[in-house]
Image (spheres, rainbow, N blue to C red):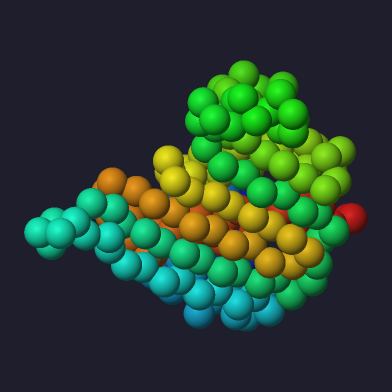
Length: 183
């Protein structure tokens, strides 16, 4: 049984609007195709995305950059910052250990620091959270969540649409609310 869209929480009629699987949750077509920022406001969230390109001296695009800022209606009592694990971060991990969740794929590719490692480990152990974090992280990218604010900074070789990026941020925020807030 569907619990509705992870962004707007609407349960679409079977014949009206499709659902798209993003990070283990369903996102309705309108939210998936660009209405996520407007529809998230109904939840008390604020979502802003900025996109720009980095070019070389000849005007050729060398990177697509997206910065997102999502504020939840309530704080969820967690802080973490995740990045792609590079050789430098693997060495850094000897002195500043990453929060490991026990999933080899995730632990080998994502470096996470946290002020509350126990709660962060429990949240990051969720397959949907792992999936969406790995989708959001590019080589020069990071994700940070503190209190009630999710901030992302993504650097990629290929353009990622604002609609895709906003639906992914909303899915991660939905997971964080679901897993961090007491029932």
